[in-house]
Length: 272
Length: 143
Image 1 (tube, each protein chain N blue to C red):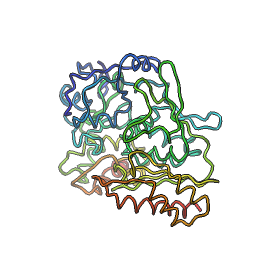
Image 2: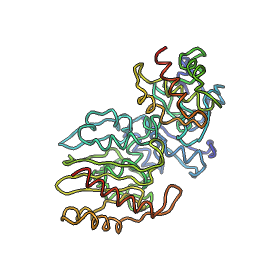
Image 3: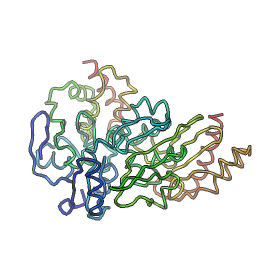
């Protein structure tokens, strides 16, 4: 590990109330499954700081349905999603996304709150949540607020989340219509997305993309075009105008733009 | 802090944010667990925590307090998977082998080849091309 461990300060939370109290006392970075955070520490890319370990806060685990809404506790792991009959029935595209996150070792530790909070534009679960108008439930020691995930991010790895808040749950309203998920990477497992998309073919189509902009993109213009009976070509051109892919180590802007259009076409054909 | 290591209650004096990998290798002297990529992609450092494969390079040791940790050393030297990896030449340079075996350990006895591939999707091998590894794991199932 490139980061020296001795100056790091870790407090372990015994309960959600304990975690929220610690976060309110001073700035601390929450650690759950540590699958992103320890990569940064291993490569010396994280300045020394204080941490709070929330992995043991079992109150934040669990998958349930309340008022026809799927409620995923913040510490729900990808493995828990893959094995959940409730998620398989209500949000099968999240199972598909979870199966393509890393390998079993990462799926056993990585959590959905971590995936959302980490804020990577390549996060695999986030387009699923964006296409389903999911709500991020944030709690501090004295307050709870619910932010639609489409309003959660404010820029590259930046969000409305405050330093004293935790993501305690993600709520996914009932999804009507066919669900569709595709991740394009260099191999089936262990690849970070070149581009990742999730769609719902309901009364009004919904389509969201990762790795094509500083944050997840909900493709409202392409959706409106498709809902209004425009040709798939016109919808694809609308999509191209609302994404802003870049060249980086994983792919090129041109490739991402072309593949985004192709994925929209395939979504439309395969869910017809 | 205390955890169960290969069935034995073990006390270590480590920084809570030290990596489980480093505590195992440097404090417990169990160097069968390897460091490969340090970013959770290669699986060379795979151990079982509470019976589940994890990358020990990404686990703060504080998170295994009170937990059951199993490493390759816990298998002794006579486990069917170990024999199968030798007999089928599932190991060449050997750095991925402990992680491969730990990941394969959680497969059910009736696992299909596809299930073996999924279980080992988080473990990279740069020597074998995987065929010998899959064959070894399938053979060990039959042993």
